[in-house]
Structure formats: structure tokens, C-alpha cells
Length: 96
Image 1 (cartoon, helix red, strand yellow):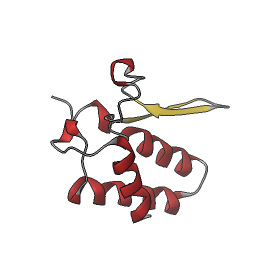
Image 2: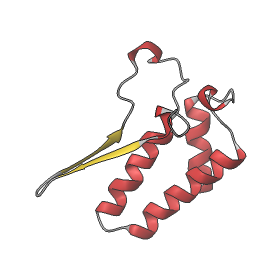
Image 3: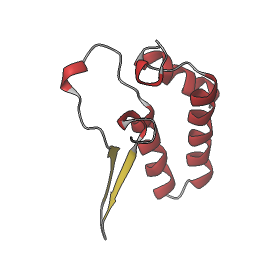
């Protein structure tokens, strides 16, 4: 299987003049508005963008905050928890 699932996978498409950073998982319309999506991939995609813009230390701080939340919780349902998207996001922000 995938490493933890699609909710954990960030991506970057980097060209000569432009770059695009986004979660691998796409839009997940079947769970839109339910507050159950794992925000980790989106947050890690943002960390990649921050690093791409030259703010390596700040990008690492985001990664460290995500790692702390993945280790200690809260976690969304795809990772065996029952936290909402908002709760996990707030936990990452709190650790920043």
C-alpha cells in the first residue's frame, strides 16, 4: 500500500519558469464539506512551496509541526483517529 495513504502525499511540478504544489490525492468530491479529509498532504505541499521560495528553515518548521501531529495526534479517520480536518490543521498551526 501507499505510505499512510493518499492523504499524506504532497507533490511538486517544477518547470523552468513556474512551479505548482498540490496534494497528490486531488479534490475528493465524495467527502467535500464533511470535514474528514486529511489536511497533511496540502500542508506538506505548502511546506514544499515555502522551501522552493527559499525559506528552507520555515519549510522545515512546517514539516516538524506536521511530524509532531502525526506522532502525537490528533489524527483523521484515515489514520485511525476521529479528528476533523479543522482539528488536525489547528494542531499543526499550534505547534508552529
